Image (tube, rainbow over the protein chains, first blue to last red):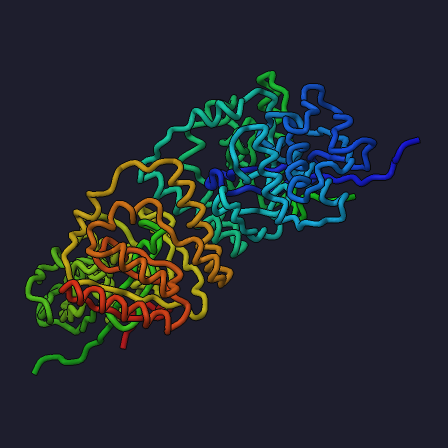
Length: 311
Length: 311
């Protein structure tokens, strides 16, 4: 009954911005992410058959991040009439600040590319994935899509040309991710940002950013720790996240290398250089948000070096 | 007749900002720079005996960058009454944009520290050198002083705390420096800068800066070349330097990795990865400025790894 053969891919969650790298830095997480099954379809063209775990997402290829990313790939291969069917396992909630729409877009295009026998490399499908994510939030930027697809810590030099570089991950670097279940709209989180930045803040931020990059290359946790203060974005967005200041204070008291907002929030992340510190921070977060009656999920992740994978 | 024994030190010129690193990056040049002879004095305290090659500089310790830097060192050692005499060979013109006052300040403090048997390390005298340079231009920043003292390519994370990191120099990296003999006042060059920067420019600049740093660590000249466009400072200052746009165009046509203003100007620099390119740029510069009736000096320098030295 039907063609049950197919392939399954996983595209991970990601943390964008990393405090000092607004719109240019992102890192890839382990374990959480979206999955897609791709199989031969029964009628011409690409179709989303089932979306599991989320009732609100559109199955219209052009309105779905996974579908549109895959569709752009098929267009470039002149294969839009190829009968392909996909199921999306939308494991991640939407609006977490952990690259949920990026993970779907990556899963969609990486899944269909893999199904077709990988006519393109991962680097070559980055543009389609970014176009897919654009369906969700309207802007063309790759600071979630690139790490989800490529793994590691990714620097996007320029979003338009999608010129990226993978930065080294120091051995032992961990992210502790804290997701308080409150709503922060990405659109609001973007709209709130001032169009201008003081030159003094630029100097402070660039000094930190350059030192952060040097710290990654040198595996120097002291450099990383000194450089993780965001002078530009976090001060403008912190008030959107309940108890951000208190949570940050506690994370730094636990000896996090740094703590900031993940993407547009409400998730936050701490970078740590050992699991005990990360576990302590997660425990503090659970306590703090539970005391405030806010549901909160925490997880600890190494930096995922692989990105999207085919099972 | 008198005590003729003494020591002689050399502190090199430097290129600050490097386009994408306003107030945070600088590199150390070879060959040109200021020299100081330090010897036992005939009366208590630090005295400048002779300043060669410049009639306008004050010999008053507190008004001379070399003198004041050395004085601050002596203060911290409780040696302000020690009889010390210095001669300054002011080889560099003032107002070149090549860290002339920084070289004097470094020579002063490094010379006196060496004369005293090096009670401090180079890193420890950076603050005194920076205080010395502050006499000349009023602001406390180390993007010339640090490379002149320490050598190499220096990243200043934070000017106030003088937190610095030496970045790697890719083998074969050269600077071609072009100094058209016109006056650009540092004070004017600073005053002209807008206090605000658009967030879009910040994103573009930070993407380039982080990639430039990655390029240095990876010895990747392609990354360096892609990342050397300054979106913030150069567009505001370029008009202060005659024929900047034409000179830049010619340097890039010669295959420079990048081209921008050295410090506050009027000097310019091209980074290159071979001597033929650097020589071609120097030749073009001589031609261009000579055609315009502007005297111009060019020189080609490796990145000086040592910084200030004692002969």
